[in-house]
Image (cartoon, rainbow, N blue to C red; front, side, top):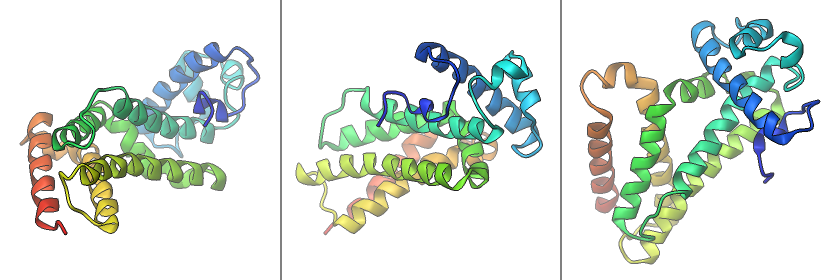
Length: 211
């Protein structure tokens, strides 16, 4: 994997730090505009204005509107990876698993629009970009697979390979449910209450189905 996956999108600018900074502005503008108007109705001229660029400057950092959507999606996975690798956890412990779930759900609470846009609009990407994003989704699931396997190897869980894979997907999907249903869920739960309830139900469920 390259140092910065955002460089997957071609740019005429050679300064990597400048590309990273400007593309973050483009990502923020894309999230705002796609939320307000939808991906298909938004124009590159509107994206440039929302990012504070001229249309000419925008095209120095992207080639198409689809590039902006790709950057929005790719940014999510970069943030998830950082979220789950930057905090200390007790490898193989239930407490470490709970902390990983918590950090992931808190990140989703900070990025609900991004997650919603990703799942609504990924189909609009070109085939190669769409497969890249879907592969990154599987990498996100794989992070939780590894955490669950560590718990099994440490003797704190007893799950088959199939159960581990399904449990990892469950964690990812239930976290993302907060983004999709936040408009309703936040009327009844705080994010902390949601995390605690989901984690409790998840752990009780997988422990009932232990080998």
